[in-house]
Image 1 (cartoon, rainbow over the protein chains, first blue to last red):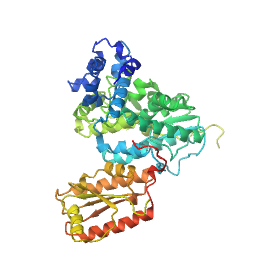
Image 2 (image 1 turned 120 degrees about the vertical axis):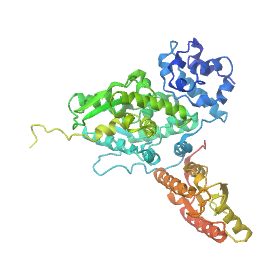
Image 3 (image 1 turned 45 degrees about the vertical axis):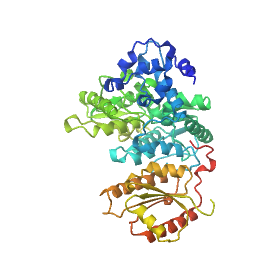
Image 4 (image 1 turned 180 degrees about the horizontal axis):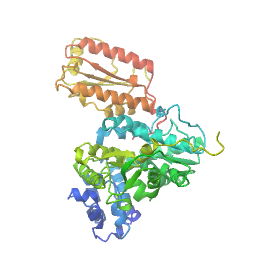
Amino acid sequence: MNFQPIIQKTRAYLCLDCGKCTASCPLARVDLDYSPRRIVERVIYGEAEAVMADPHLWMCMTCGLCSARCPSHVDFTRFIVEMRAEAFRHGERGIYAHNGILQEVMRIQTLNVHQNRTRWLAADMEVADRGDYFYFVGCLPFFDVIFADLGVQALEIARSAVRLLNRIGIAPIVSNEERCCGADLLLGGDVDSFQRLAELNLETIQASGAKKVIFTCAECYNAFKNDYPAFVGPLPFELMHLTELLAPKVEAGELRFAPLPGLVTYHDPCRLGRYLKVYEPPRTLLHGVPELILVEMEDNRERAMCCGSTAWVNCSGCSKLIQREKLRQARETGARLMLTTCPKCQIHLSCAARDLDDEQAVEVEDVISWVGQAIEPQARTENDG
Amino acid sequence: MDDLPKIIAFACNWCSYAGADLAGVSRIQYPPSTRVIRVMCSGRVSPMFILEALRAGADGVLVTGCHPGDCHYLSGNEKAVHNIELARSLLALLGIEPERLRLEWISAAEGARFAQVVKEFTEQIRQLGANKLQAAGDRQP
């Protein structure tokens, strides 16, 4: 089998064998047998088949800290994703977390389904069937069912998102025909299912006439922006994270919040941060909330630590150790609340936070659902009665 | 659907599988619609099995286990209740009729009951019609 295209595409041939990747990798710190450098070297020196059969192939969280620091700009996360696709074709699989329920939910959506995924909409929310803005809800309705045990109220993110959009005068399209973005299938090597989901989503959004697609999930946003074009061509609409849309409104004073007193810290999800370089908008949004004080963790922005698990594969004791370190950094800021912009980071970190005693306790919530509880009604203008 | 729906029946090793066996050795007639899969406990049936069965073309999924209080592993069937509820919620979201999934308690002595449950469920699925998931899906990953 020929692995040259993967080596070429990801610039792996430029690897200097310096080991910065392994030194940076949060996983290598807790799993001494894991080494991104060695994975690259083994493939270059003709041991690709062995790498495909090695469970370590599925352990990388694709957090991208290695690629960000690589002096040769080797795209290691891409390298891993391409190797997994090859391994998947050869019948290899990661170890599915949560019994593979999430993979099944995603694969069923490649078929002829007519979902009931918008039942969370409440009477006070304005949504539309057609219009300029499409709110891509992602897996939130499914997370709300599957992760209810963790106390993660995933749909609060969606409800807050619609209320915030309504507040700035947008009635977004929310569709039952939307499918999972498929990112986790792609990351798990299942390229065919990903392709199908991308096609179906493109079809749905195009049919709605939307010009902008708004996301609250960093993973969906990244999948659309960085992966969809390679599978379905350039997208005929603009993509935005909700925080990117709201931040300018906060700065202009058009969007105000009621006070939410307290210290909070912000976790940069790797997709929104290192992948898409969206660091400031969520912070701007938080700065717009009176009496909310944002304190930064030791490792923030491009250095932010991963939430410990990706693609619902190979969640392990190592994931837990990484999560514990992340929560420790959060607690060290003095904050007892960590906000993020990726529901999956929220799920993973909430899971690990259950084991903490009162002294170390940290709660994990989404930025959107947190500020959503403090939306101030439209400010009165002088013309108002 | 051919006249006969395709049903995947999960049966626990300790009660329901023996119940199905009893239906057989007692020569009780019931529709040949089920493919029985023996599991050690009804609690082993993950929502993933149910979703996968439906994705692969089953028209219905029947999960059977020991009566409450009789579980060989004490509380496995309580876990089954939780799993089935989770699966039902997921099916509802996905737009698949939750009635395609049924949970029944069948002991090793209830051969006639096993036959009766299969007969009823087959009729129920026949009324729902074929599982249309594959209709537009041109591939099965």
